[in-house]
Amino acid sequence: MDDKHILLVEDDETLQALIEKLLINNNYVVSKAVNIEEAKKLVKLFLFDLIILDVMLPDSTGLDFYENTIKNRVNTPVIFLSALSNVDDRVTGLELGADDYIGKPFDSRELLLKIEKNISKKQSLDMVNFGNGTEFDLKKEQLLFQKQNINLSSNEVKILKLLINNSHQYLTRDLLNTELGLDYLSRSGDMQISRLRLKLKKECNLRDIIRSVHGKGYKIFI
Image (cartoon, rainbow, N blue to C red; front, side, top):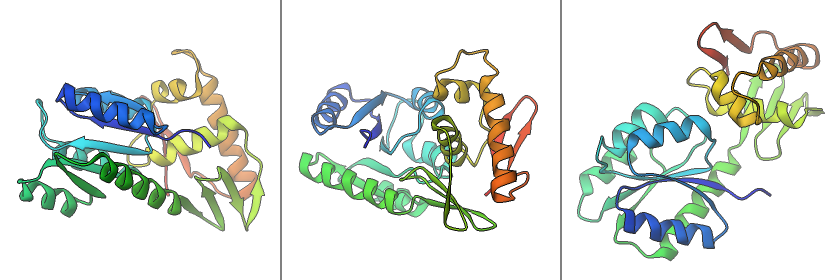
């Protein structure tokens, strides 16, 4: 199983370094951001298994970033970092739909337990229903039609996961090419999406579930 990828958004460089070391020592892959601008770039480039998000950041608040950018991403759990005394921020985050919070300062064992719990919960919900008897198991990376497995290439699996995790917005060619390891100007990703659409149509009788808009990219309607 691949190591889980966590986005850590924290502007206190000392605390960020401590958390990063803790996560790496426990076999997590870590990407870091010190502000919302950096975090926005990273969520466009990677599909994270979990996000650790400080509430107070220099260019905005973690709450705003969560509500405007993260909330509608499929199955991306968020743990807010908040001062223990700031009850209002914790309550607001949970009301917005965040998965968990941890107060600063915190015990490393508590943070690791919260991470494990939320990633496990995410994995238990990783079945996406496309309709017409078609489901995609994000954990097992399997497309099922009438409970029968439909063969997918590794890139087709990546594309489906990208579309699902970005279902609230259009999947740009830049992100598609980055995730598939293609050249910036390559059209290979477009051709692979065309083949995937044809497979969904022929094998699962799903029409127009993946749509394209010129200048915006691709979007899956689920």
